[in-house]
Image 1 (cartoon, helix red, strand yellow):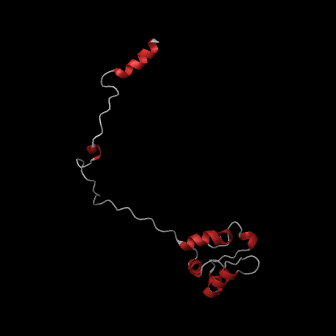
Image 2 (tube, rainbow, N blue to C red; image 1 turned 30 degrees about the vertical axis):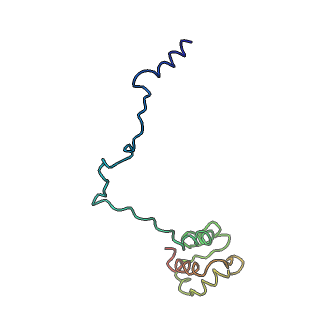
Image 3 (cartoon, rainbow, N blue to C red; image 1 turned 90 degrees about the vertical axis):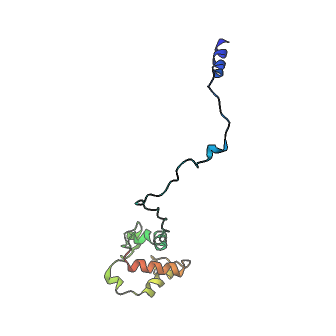
Amino acid sequence: MLLVVAIGGSGCEPGRGEVRQWQPNDHDRADQPAQQAQPNQAAPQPKRPPNRAETVWRTACANCHGPQGRGDGPNGPSTGAPDLTRDDWLSTVTDEQIFDTIKRGKGEKMPPNPNLPDSAIQLLIQRIRNKGR
């Protein structure tokens, strides 16, 4: 019983547990100086939107053709994916041929992509021509 009185009585000490009433100026920051950007401090740069060609490449092409288009993706060896960065290949194929291969597929190893928008295929062609850059 004494323990209860000792614990219960500890909250009755003056100055302990007192809470003052909230005042609107508790949240008023008018008395604080405004934060200004420093002259040599760069403004935050907005995030660049993801590169659409890279996004399409990663989802539709990289498994076979690899990250740069060298045919070294995880499925590249089993599908016989060609190295699309070779100058001898790039110099002999037209953009129309690349477009047709992406859209309609080629043989049993290159699947067709009929649902891929033409604009996305054009971006892939540019990426291939730039050797994955």
